[in-house]
Amino acid sequence: MATEKVGIYRKYHGPIPKDKSGQPLSKNDWPKKRAFRWAVRWFGTEGKRYSRSFKTRKEAERFAERKQPDVRSGKANPPPKITLKYYYDEHRKLMKGNLAESTLQMHLRTLKLLADHAGWNFQIRKVRPRDIEGFRATRLKTGISPSSANREVRTLKRLFNVAIARDYIAKEHNPCSAISLIKVTPKRPKYCSPKEFSAIYRLAPDTYWKTLLTTVYTTGIRLRELLNLTWSDIDFEKEQLHVTRKSRTDWIQPWQPKDHEIRTIPLPKQAIALLEAWQSISPKDCPYVFMVQERWDYYCKQVDKKKWREGQDLVNNVLRRFKTLCRKVGLPKYSIHDLRRSCITNWAKHLPIHVVQQLAGHSDIRTTQKYYLSVQEEDIKKAQQVQTRLLEEIPASDLTDPKVTHSARKRAFPGRKTFEVDL
Image (tube, rainbow, N blue to C red; front, side):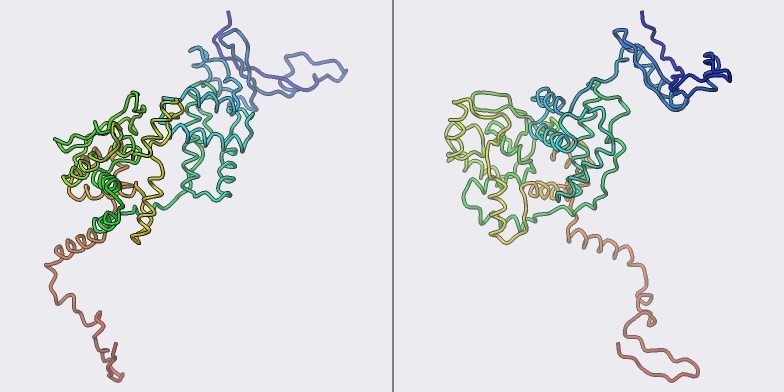
């Protein structure tokens, strides 16, 4: 039976030294006369012996200390030789249904970019920080933004953590852990004011678009949540909207919200009235709220033929048509997500931050604070008014010192002429 002890030994190399008479020295004299490295040796779960050499004894001892718990817990075997291609195919197969489709596609897209850069047959355990840095530098040369480069590095870090969980690489060998992200100054979140939204609303072409835009602007739901919304999610009596996961039925595709959060959002009476109006003319028997007749007919045919792909957009071209609408109004290039941010900012003006977090569906309140609460001109004016009230006790005379006012006259000094300066 193989021992569970991790041993440290000298590993000699080069010719055996000889004495003055030309005879080989005994092994007892080798440490002083023959070149060697320090080797760490251990046995795997099937009795096979493994080793790894180091230049110094201290390096060997540190490695042995880390390896000893793995040997005793049955994890003595070195990571398997997994290529990027194998890992890509396996991840696509194993994560299907375990991740949101959009998240899985982002993982696969980023992994493919790395494999194209390093080579599909490159072993995942041999990826080093310099390889990740080289990959990022290559991607930046293609013209992507630093924010996009940071997102790809974070995605790769998550993928290598999954590889660690599958025992493909050692715990301390995530190559992205040593990579510092590029510092990027965040942009000010776009805010669509009620006045601007009214301008967009007035140019909306029909009841469908008026209902869609009003729903997003007053509930702050994400685009995916909007497109997967069914009529059963609308409680007309309580004037509420429910964001919840969907199970597969004859005409409903399986779907679940981001971060698996289920929440209830109040609907204003205007949104309820628009939803009722749209329901009266929406496609018959269509379970989805924002699916027009043409799309519903296409969807039914694809489902009947079993050609509808899981994760396929239920409604397409929503963002493109919305940007066209903004351009006609003469407003900035807002996105549907900007309407969501604006709704959350509007909530924050009247509701506690923890309530805003719950309504927005954020698992971390810092996300609400960092990306969605936009400071507006009226907020700055209110802050100025508060500052003014705090300084009301300062005498007015202190604020009109002739030495610091533009209307002051130049003071006379001994030996100099007195004259006036018009400023």
